[in-house]
Length: 160
Image (cartoon, rainbow, N blue to C red; front, side, top):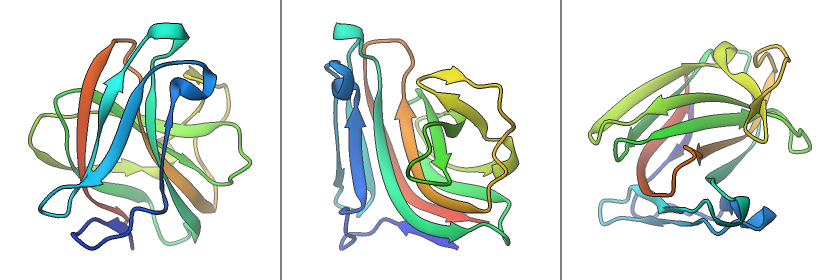
């Protein structure tokens, strides 16, 4: 099931940037479509004012996960490490995440839902791994504890 496929006429309305500015930080980022219709999420992470993260959120709605075991993403990064995080409810404080390293080339990465670990504000929680029946939100996060520029090019996100 395709959750989002980027193309020249796609609507980015359900995508939302959330940076460390929500807590006083100074990181900046944005998303736009390139000439091929890929989503380009890019910016600069700053450690000023106790900052250090940038994230790009997508509101999936409420998707039942009964028939799915993995999330597959088709991306091209800049060699940096990112996280893919998910939530089953909007009001959920914790998210569930897995890290991935980009290579600078196009990659197709698969993440087993059962391997997403509970995280809150960058700290691993002693909760069971993701075992929910619905998915409502997913997001990409960069928080490498370094001031750095980044770019992640997105093509497609799907459940398999």
